[in-house]
Length: 377
Image (cartoon, rainbow, N blue to C red):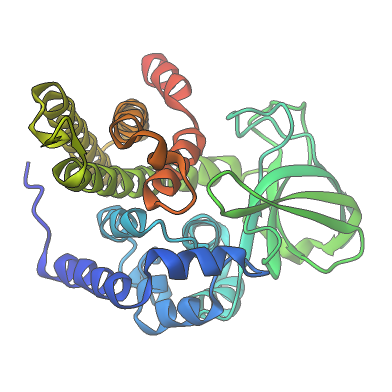
């Protein structure tokens, strides 16, 4: 299997690397996190100008191509920089759902605004006690004529406080965990009955708890057919899972690089700690973990881009997320331990990288969940 990048993918990778080197240093990132929005609107517009926001969309919708491999090329570089801009919630999650479910008019209205950097979105799908079961939806959507009333509460809505439009997963019919009866609606974040409680996650990225108290929207705000949104939601979440896995790989490679560099300058007993054989072995193990994680993520991305059946694609995604989760634990903990106490300080980027990969480990399903899902397929 050929894991080498195409010329276009190399150019995409180079574009992100140059941006990070020039404009996204660690101190700059910390200032962005401390801002009211938690991301840089200037950077977001630059992402649009560079064409990065077109990557998740296929050519028919005016995008770069919609390849998952292309997406992982970018996400890996984002991970190295601990980038905080809401690329995953807006472009990957919501953009993916719009691309899969929206009708021609909805696509024509929304996709150009996303690609031009003019529209922030958030996908409200997770609920208390739903765990990683996307079919566990208690938020209700009651249809009466040409209007729909949405009632319920969503948690951990990534980019929820910045979004202008929310994609709300709600149940039109069936029991709480039925696969049928789930729809997705476009809801104005400022609509009457929408209450947004914003907070920062452990990695500094923003999320929100959003309550919908009898929020009324038109039936034309529904994406796709009534009650048939779950398969598209599962597919888009799988794409996003591979994307954040690639982001984790980038962060782990940054942790490895910084740990090796630190071991060359930190001295103990008159010698650099990098000369100690026990630490050399641990860093060699970190390197192996990074390579295994990267290889399986690339393979999963290629599977999603292939003509394989849905079961094989799901198995590839879960295998990758499970393997990456193990790498996060091993590489992350070793990086902190080799750095010692300084590794957990706010002043050093290593601690921030560790927090980010810890958050990525549980996003869209942790190691235990994906190991169990792989075994069940």
